[in-house]
Length: 333
Image (cartoon, rainbow, N blue to C red; front, side):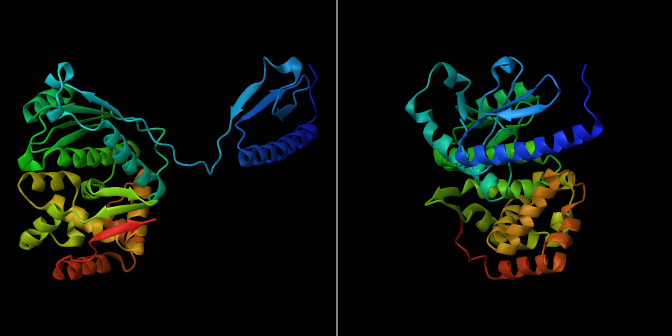
């Protein structure tokens, strides 16, 4: 078999890189998405929009996608379970188009605002149950655990979300839609940043409950339940620096015992997202955990927040003392 010299191989490889780069730029910018790669009898690599006739069988087809391609919506699958599986009526029917639209807002927010390239990796099925009893039974059958004190749950082992139609005293269907967006946030963050602390995971999910998209802008409205809870329980709030330093096990334990951790997490994240330097802090935290960084957010705070832990705590205390009245909503391009 013919063996080219080392110098010939080096030159050939350099030419391949140059030709490949030119082809990629040309095809990507013109919107074409097919390139063929093949090797001739002398071992030389070729690229082209059509393979040579004698090399059609051996040619490798390369799919290209423009780096400027618009965000593509996901097809969200909604499945009715329990008694709703056999028979559904309008009282327990959810608007599937609305779920599709709103869950895609959440996915798109993480992609375009927080730079998570995730939407090829996180397919999620949403299972809808008629009431809380059937919801508990369904989740237990999947996970072996009863979801006490929950309005919905993300099941990471199977990438599934389970919710039930909330009664009117809990906000009815409107609250069910919010819960679906909340759990979609958990699905994204668990799939890409499993080590994330609970305060950040829950704080982000709380914001997604009020997320909307209008005029090519993302809008996060104040979470009124979080707002009321924090103001009503000021004396029970942890100091901000200690709060984000808390490990997830302790955080969950204190939450189960009635602490206002969920509401405080939501308000801390809302405050951060309302400021450009705060959004930068949240984005860097999320990206660090996405990369697998094992440091606690307390230490990352000093690296990523202007002024570090002391400034973060001061900004929180000032905002809290002012009744957290501003802003009413956050608008993000």
